[in-house]
Length: 627
Image 1 (cartoon, rainbow, N blue to C red):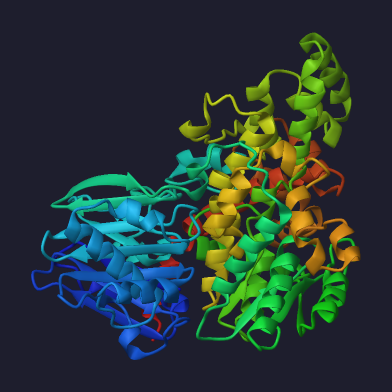
Image 2 (image 1 turned 180 degrees about the vertical axis):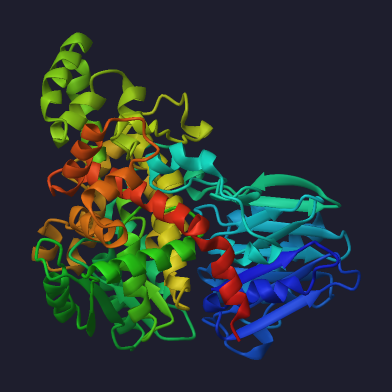
């Protein structure tokens, strides 16, 4: 993995060096800059050397004919096999890195006049890159179809652009102006969905985007999502054995690195399943099991370190337990640091945990395997089960009766039952919107950003929710956290569950089958033989902090009294003081997680504003001034 940056400004080529200093944490092993003779483009890369650490693999890479120049951030599964195949067909290869493979594939496609998007769709991995074609004076920008790696574009008033792996790199072009219009989407999702970012004139490439920029004119193509190659919901009788084989191959590919590899572990299935398969691969290769990491809490209601310790003893892994931040100042500082990494408002409180965890993991390994994507692909969230209950039972009741029951349940609006009944009181679209909107404060006017590809498809609610989470929530939420928190400390998270063969298999199975015998039915069956039975059957706690407690501590640490908190956090809402007090008390009660998350999002929004839009300008300025 790396950090990349560049610009088409002909008189500002030296600015790329400043941008790269702001990204230095992403690539501590090497910094490289290339500018073409006419200064039409400058590309830069800070490199984290995880494959082929030799100097010949340093970036930007230049093709043997000098026509193409590439700055690449990412990892390609099975890259050595693919490079060997290219070599057998006469392709000249200068090194054994993932970037060299992408350079060769893009060059061949452009020279032959075939579709680069089609060629890239055949690659499984996580990446973003910038490629310059010297002959056509053309810039290509790309982001992988699952949205695992980021790429941001800053449009300049004169029509030129700059681009970077993180928004913090753009302060070289002046202070970013906050985009207040993002707030309804931010509150509904708890993040800013692409292409919006939180800054005016700055956009994020959406997952799968391949952009071609030539002479100031831009057109875009789409790299096909692996799930789109199957007919959604067509049960191909995917067996547990077939799924396990696909995930194991993805794990084996992810472990192919020229550095030490570790794994995250937990009390759940996803990271534990990946860790178990990683140990199996290591044994097959004659290697020691990879070292493991888990977050530990003082509160047993949130702590998974005991279960992780038992699991690692079973698998033969050494385990590091990283203590979660607990004091008000610790939580507040980790939150502010994480917001600086993101560059915009981000309201999943788990980013505080991952930020702390990643710092400790990076002290031991450069690459760490994670179970990200398991909930979205295999049906792990309770909302999906609510969708199935609605589809199989509740929707068949007369609508007036459903509305009456929802109204009567409204006397206890903080109950999970009321949220289900309110969503199920009308049609499919209403249920989808209410259950996926994370904001329960009606006066916020929070608004979901739903892709056109989901509208009017006639999907079952549970299938639509799983697809929505896979295509929107996963890249905007969990994958963003993995990238920013890992790369903040020069750590590359690899996500085997999101290997393209695994994604295709999961997408071919309808939600009804994923949920048939409880959450993650197919995945649970697939991994059961690799894990102890007590772990497979143990209830999931999830990678979550005590949100209500943290909300109370951080808000009081920052603003003091409850009255000052109320007047600050709710100041943009046209509601009475009594209603503000009621929302605040519900949020910190520990009995209403939805309200706690909603108020946490309002708190983060206010912190982001007070810090000058997550300190986009000053944070970058500080990085740029660093030696």
